Length: 177
Image: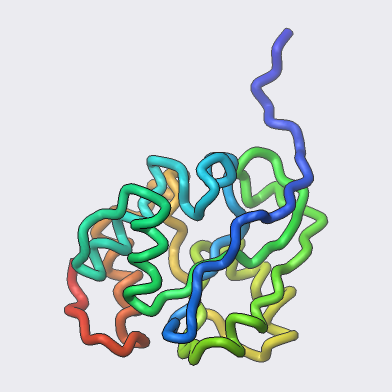
């Protein structure tokens, strides 16, 4: 009898952070999903709404390639990474995370004038507060998850909540999607 239940797997984060000296906002997810690890970049699942939300609030075309996604972040002064460096996880289920090892975000904070740190989802926020906040002494702002599993949030509501990012960027953007 075949089981569809995903087995726990120990994952080491291998996607480099996206940032440069002009970054003003840091957005942290939890850990790359299996699809993100497969594509080699953040929010790689085709149903994840992160890239649609970001392109909408920034009023830019929807990026298709990894290079376009990286450019969208850097051109708009947004750093992107994840809270965790390693963990044991079942599939993409944040609720199953154990044996968490945090990423060291200090190099990003030293290299750029980060004005605000955001987390994408409750688990990223909880892990940030447990492992990273005590080290860096910086509060994070929790945003809702853009995961397809978070169907309670409409695309319009996600855009409304993510638009808070714009207030921390140098460039002026309109705050509606």
